[in-house]
Length: 234
Length: 288
Image (cartoon, rainbow over all chains, first blue to last red; front, side, top):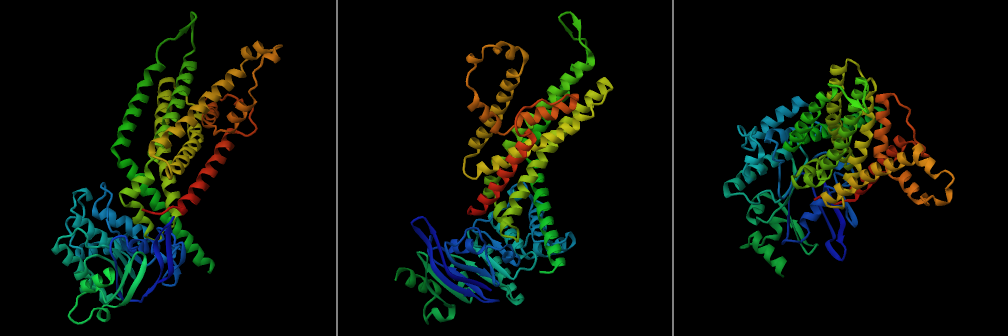
């Protein structure tokens, strides 16, 4: 579903991503882990064609990421999700529906369902400038789900949320498992990653250190945090 | 790919483009500054209605009322067209950066929308909204002139349409500059271009006047060498010349211009270059 093949990204002398290769299979819940500045967000940005790889290939569903069609079945939640302040949650979702080509009628039905799932029903007509960070994040996640995407790319989806907000996001993601959605999750919250994802990759200074099923890399008596620290500090 | 598939693809791209244009216009109109500027300009334009009344006397001779009406209308036409260019520059100078900051850009470009669709949609949206702004004000002047004098100026609204090409140039050029320069620098550069254009046209008109030509007749050796400045003048975007060309339709005058390329073609070429560079360079930029 997602294929990163020897992807490299250099900014002048700095190598943000250094010949990283991995694949995320259909239906997999995949976590991309690493300390700050490891290159996780750069990989996400290459997937979305926000930045071009200096070397290597990045593709989604066999389509090179630089082609517009590669983003046809993708939902993306940014690390610092924002909604223009003059738009309501509903208007924002309606715009997103426009961009993925949903008809007005289809958009209305889907937005109604998504507002329920995201727990934003009743607040959708308020201007986004009145929303809390958690509400913006939930609308952002709702926007990802429009058009029933095959792949979700979530960059720190629980950043800045309180424990209840984190739990709500986790529940939404859990419910998507039955739909066969593929998720690439970029997160620092290792306890959440352990609960949600089945596969993980750890990168450090742009290099891939390990990529395997979480059940394989976490030894008995350890948790994902221990593994993360072992790889990153070791 | 089959032709029906290509057709569907093209229709879907067109729909996306129209959505971006619609949203851009909506976002612009929703800004308080837009409404404030529009209301101020509207009140100012309405304020000219008294200029059509009364008797004007020059050197003891009564001036024809129709002449006064024409002069006022032409003057206001040029004033509004100039204001519209300034407003186009103000709107365009920060649109890309603002949309990076408020998340609009990453929202759109994470969807199956190409960067070309995005940038064309933004430029077209700004062009349309500024043109409508100018056209509405021109329509008010046209209506006042008609009500006060009973005579319609059929070329007035056509002239407004012609001036829209200046707005397209300002929008595309400022957006292009804003990829690399701070907002205000973009505004200053395009303002300087506009100013050079007006000054150049002024000097050009004076140099072609009979009085100036008579003054230099027989004194060719005293003529300063202006060939460099002439090239500069002819090569620069002919923003004000297009405006004067357009306003010639209001009074049905012959447009007198001795340059090699018609000012409309000059601006169309500049628009093509600005838009082309904008598309290519925006494609190469990283999205924040």
